[in-house]
Length: 443
Image (cartoon, rainbow, N blue to C red; front, side):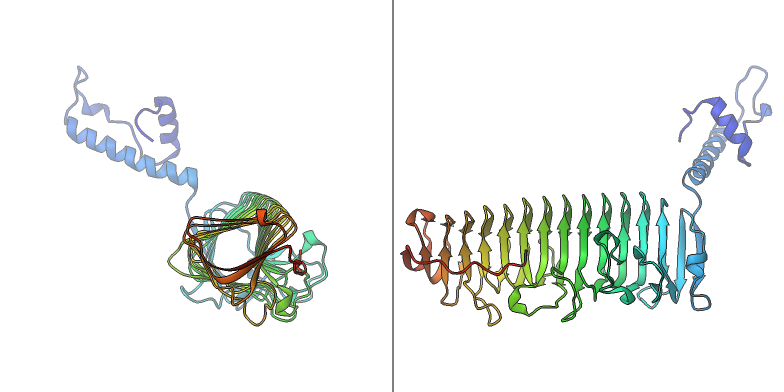
């Protein structure tokens, strides 16, 4: 806003805003020369500054603050008429579901900073399964702070895929930020879809979900700016493929500052419960933040998707790429389980570490099969006495200052193996050996 606005527009605004006036004619002599010019200029500038502030208030709306006491009335938040540019401070656990549709700049926060004893919960016995404890849609922009969102009463409920219950749901190009928030339960604890975005800041935990902890679907984005803890229900999951992180349909999940990620489990660990799944042209990226990352369960990439590891990641599980999937580790990735690359997929390690399998993973440490490609550059490997298998037109490329730690290599055709540039620690190379059985992958 400046003095270049037209006089007609300015006069119209002055008519509706009190306290703004044109200069008094008495400030000028008969020839139009100003009297007290500097004083008048200062007064005019002050009035324009005031006008700027008032017009901004009109354009963006004055912020309102509303207290919602769910200790006295659990349905108080449901009964409230939500408005843009408003902060709602909750006391106690409010009944959900709460539907936020086509709203801008709404904040839901607890009444005490650093406390999470306020929030929203789904009561048992709702006649129709809700979309989520808090469901956000149609380009809404929402902040969540110092809250608990609970869908514990809706874990493992029968549902059609598109009607799963979430602790937090955002769709239709909405934007959500969460700080000091616990999301508990639901089939999808956090479900971000259809062009929506979620930013997670400090103090976020996602627990006790049935199918997926962080789910990004159909051009969605989830990005973390602080360590996040994601852990599903253990031993009671009703899902065939539960995940801590799921990116599907041209979606992206960016883990920028570490955390712990464990998939829900209803199966024994040697059946490779999946912690991280990237599929259908999607990307999961573990960045080089200041905090380490631990993944409990397998990491899998398929269908022209990628998992990239550029930070310090410890994997307690298998790593698998298939159906044109791609996994690339350029950080200090440590794998505690077997590694599989097959079906025209690629796994590539650069300046990383591979450790032997533990007792829960008795299979071959590295298996490259069906036109899979395994590449290793400047990487230290300890296969714990196991063998690197290359079968079914798979290919391995070993480069740089890599060390296999004395591991043997078994292959069908010597042309499947490319070793050069000072690779050390290679045991016996035996070709035309029978391949091991294909791994029991969950996908």
